[in-house]
Amino acid sequence: MAKERLTARARTQYTDYTVKEPMELMAFLASKMPDASRTKLKSLLSKRVVFVDSIITTQYNFPLQSGMKVQISREKGKREFNNKLLKIVYEDAYIIVVEKMQGLLSVNTDRQKERTAYHILTEYVQRSGRHHQIYIVHRLDRDTSGLMMFAKDEKTQRTLRDNWHDIVTDRRYIAVVSGEMEKDSGTVISWLTDRTLYVYSSPTDDGGAKSITHYRTIKRGNGLSLVELNLETGRKNQIRVHMQDLGHPIIGDGRYGIEEINPIGRLALHAFKLCFYHPVTGEQIKFETSYPQNFKNLFIKNK
Image (cartoon, rainbow, N blue to C red; front, side, top):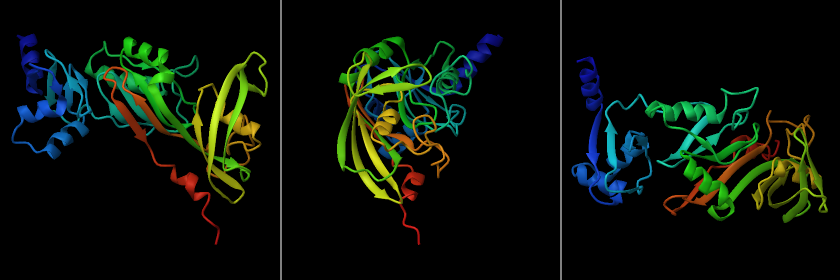
């Protein structure tokens, strides 16, 4: 009887629907809730109360297939995600795109297993069931903020990792560097060798990994430059090393720059743009955050 009561209680927490034919999620919701406005349906998605096969789905045009189960939670507050170090920008059954704050490790290390983006998201998805997992696709340095993506199953992870350069069409960063850049734009090419605690750069092929960074100077002033960076390759510490190569290290960078030049108390590097083809649906998806305000404040003229 206890099990039956729990089952009955669980059923009252959701409105359940079964998909009979392929269609997009918004069209499906509209067919099941004909009196609800499009704004109301979008609100359900943004409030993260719509589940597809037990996974929160916010993508309005998510492609449903016959046999899938769509649920709308009636306990709206219990599955919300709130964390001051991590913001979920997008989520569907296959991927999660987040904005990571500076100071948060992307993934677990031997010394840090709990206060990482990976751990926080793993705890979050396991609220829907212990079998749910998070899979690492790429990383951001601890002191770099911005957009990054995780997979929700091994197949999607392999697709992203094996086809990263074909799937990801645009990945850009914004940085504040010391000194005023000589050129408005340019490209840095070098061979990087990762020796765990430090990445070394060589202008010629010395056996390291060829690395390419394109840059564009956005603004100059107060002995600093605001620079937009577009990665053609994605090596460890690549941007930080390449800005050091140019003689304009990122402010707040104690490893590849001058830590004393740190007017905002952090490494001034932010991943602000991420564009890619969805690894399952093939849809082109674009995410962009604004430049951090404290980066822009550095270029306000002193009165």
